[in-house]
Image (cartoon, rainbow, N blue to C red; front, side):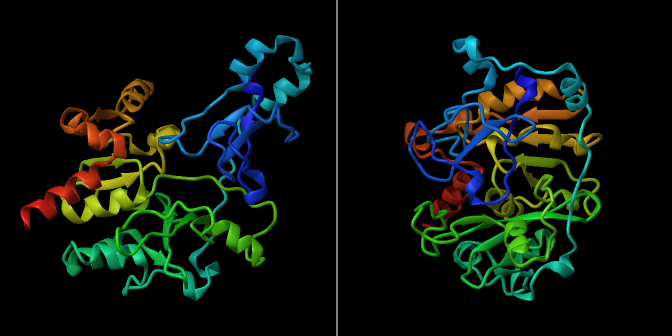
Length: 312
């Protein structure tokens, strides 16, 4: 029966709920039926995969609550088996000018990176990845697919002193989505549906001969691109997003660099893609210290620390 339910699509903050495990607000995605009705307030997945990791599936829930298993009409099941191949995207000309990529890279994350990495390297990644900024200096990571279509943009606020993502829920705009803002400004229709792709996917055609290096976060991808430009760095957007988005990488050589707590997850998931030339790196798994594991470091953290140590 678990195939009957899907994780609720993000429409606005009201579609994200309080996690029953960690108690944080607006971070819990419920499983819903085709009419959008949730199974139970505890059945879903927390966005905080590293610090919380709560994920209760419909199958697990109904195993313990078999008497609550709903009746499913066979006609409905047949209809649900038809895949939804709709892929909505929006043109860059729909994006307000103050949210477009800027050569100055006027945001807190870029300002921080310029204290560590030569400006010429930063200018290249701003251009390649179309890094954009909001008026309050948050970073916009645009998702451009293989054909250059803009699927959406993840908007994230960073501390200009540490370069760390701001996680304080009291800070406005600490994380949001471009398509949500465009809907609020009536630049997108109400029925517009997000279909995400790999961050940096549009660069596959620009760099056809580079080995693809896959990481979790967009920030990690751009930092690694500046420090190790011999690879083409793409990001899944999260540990759990190591999924069918990877099919676009067919015919490319791929090395995956999961965060320190994601090695075994990605190693297991890699077996789902026998048609890809894919290897999961154990670099962090072999070299991370107990403190690194406690801090949930990723490859960018490891590289920046090495860079800073060599300058001392």
